[in-house]
Image (cartoon, rainbow, N blue to C red; front, side):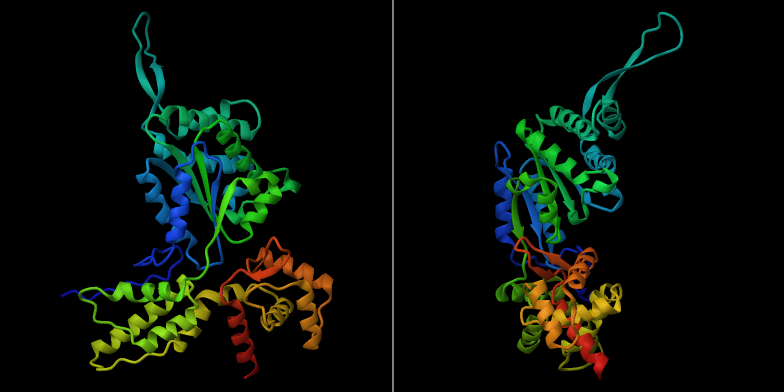
Length: 402
């Protein structure tokens, strides 16, 4: 018999063997698919490791089953450089879905006089869409509107609508210094199409900085979206995520009640951490079984150091020594795992005899936001953008003082 493969997958965006929870999110998304006309779009936001990318992949077949086309991708820095590159990204994502559709006929001219010309079907492929884009007069937004209107005119008898879904959307920002406004372009085009009752549904996922970016680009963005913030799983959902994948015929690995409680404790319900600790525990137990250990034993804290290396150390290495000092002070706030203010950081720095001036705190927080370690919410408070980062920082400080 083939050995039972480790079912747990802690990779970035990797679908878990069992998706615990998230039923509410799926239901809310399905409601948006039934809009007529479309008045609200969809945002999934949350910290790293809460399963935004995984959930996005779960939503795709729901939309397809309901009769929608789904076009999307991960947004990259290159795709968000300018309005034109973002438009190209959207066109490239839609083209494979519509390339088999015919937009008209073209004559295939032959040499010679009075020779009849053959006619070939003009397909709505990437070349055709790009040509339409290039030949449309006006701004980049006018060109993209034209392309998306033509696409809908061609496919509207076959589908209920088209979902444009983009992951890592927090990187999409307007760049006034370069006179490039890709985020504004996206919002303007979608609003224009929806006002004309053309069913394009925009789905965006990203870190908590995503929505403030949207509102900063266009004030009306606040009214365009239903926002769902993904959080950690409940205790019961976490237990399901731990146990369901190994409650399978042929699986020789089991977790004790103590082991389950340890995974609950150290993962705090964050999906990535659940998968990480379960994978490590599964591998360790399986290897002990193979060499004849009757009662395999593991301790989850042994895997914390590996988690630090795999998940946190790369981010920690990118900050300066002075920024680390500031992060250490934040980690010692009683509310470090929730929300904190500039004032609280300043007061704590004085208490710890390592005073930071308000101007430095402000500028450092901005740089830490750019580094993806901190985000500022709409209540003018700050939070860590990485789950349990305060715990990691405290561990680093403890090791440094040993």
